Length: 105
Image (cartoon, helix red, strand yellow):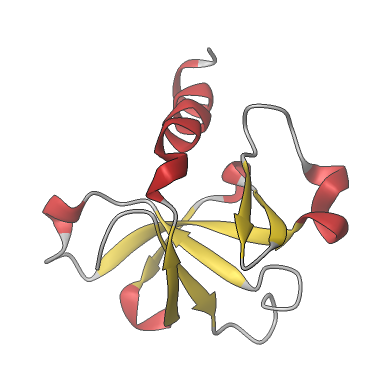
């Protein structure tokens, strides 16, 4: 597993709104059974929940998705679906969003 890898969301209750989960946990913690994820929602569906700087907008297969960082969660790795892509090109935006949650700046 690699940091900033996007996985399909296997949860039948949430996958319609959040088809993808972004693994943000450091690769140094691969041995831990759980990981920290940010849900990615199709921008056209979740745009009312988007907060500037807190919710980076990313592109996956030509579609825009919003990362709802305010909904980050720790989950068991077995709940992750198939690997979709890696979006480490957006690393700075995600670090800024997490920093905003922690420090307020």
